[in-house]
Image (cartoon, rainbow, N blue to C red; front, side):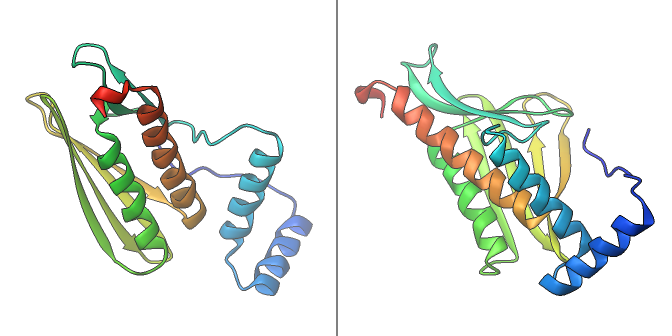
Length: 172
């Protein structure tokens, strides 16, 4: 399950962090968020966002149709079409750009049904993933910073592209 954590740093670093945040017109959390994102990229760790696993593939039981899977703690894996994955990515980007304050994307794939609801909350965002593939309706609420939302949007788009790339031309 996703949660906030505490990190202990020296008081000198706390003051440096506050000065950096003020200098850049950001929050201290945003400075840390950006530093992690930059270091992650510099290390060549790719677009992964633990604990999310988002990937594109083909459905071997459904005429090799392209599909995108989202696996994370707390819910049943969510299956969706590449178009639905791209719609989630677009919804996240519209929240970040302040074009929208809310989006809803149903994710229906064969008998699997789920949905995504994104909202702007204060300086950040909330992504809710609703899974009703079983009798027990489950929803996961995930707080996102703007850079994590951007990275998540990129991961959904990359998975959609991956699914389309591996699918036979006839299934597309």
